[in-house]
Length: 88
Length: 146
Image 1 (cartoon, rainbow over the protein chains, first blue to last red):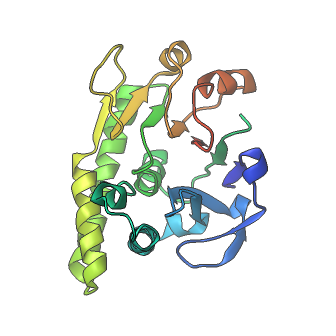
Image 2 (image 1 turned 90 degrees about the vertical axis):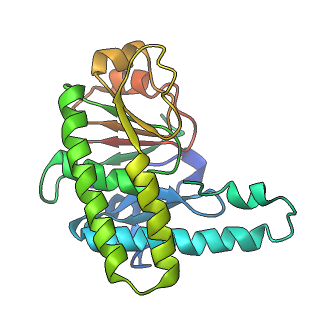
């Protein structure tokens, strides 16, 4: 069992896993990072059995979302706004 | 409680500390992280050890990939992972910063309910205690229970 409760009006019944991209019910998902729109992202709980895939899956997700965030803010003149998402 | 994501974890294999360390990897960026445990000093010790293993897995993945963007992101991530500061909660401690993982006992956490984006509760708590522990957490934050 994984996600058992979500914020009321934001609650989806299913969500896509950021690693295998499959739509899964929330009780089969684990909450991880936020996407470029600051929405909660999820991955299948089963991926915790595969540490290498879990790490690479989330790292690739960050790469994709970092690029998307840069495109979304391409018109901004302030580099700080580009960098505000996902500063390590 | 309605404004929170709540996740109940069950062990696939290995220990709670291993699962928590890998889960921590997936949550290391969104704000402050708090771990509530019966024995926070021991929990800190075992999670730190598992965290070092997660770092080694990430280092091996970086060494084995040929994708430039993946290498770049893994390097960023590893720098952050190696700097992640795990500490026992202390009253009025000035360096409990956004990038820290704070370990607390349950009685301490009830006296000073954490204000954090991710809260791990590693023991059974009743609904009333759960509500007290999570009362200062912002909407959209995550509570992980074991």
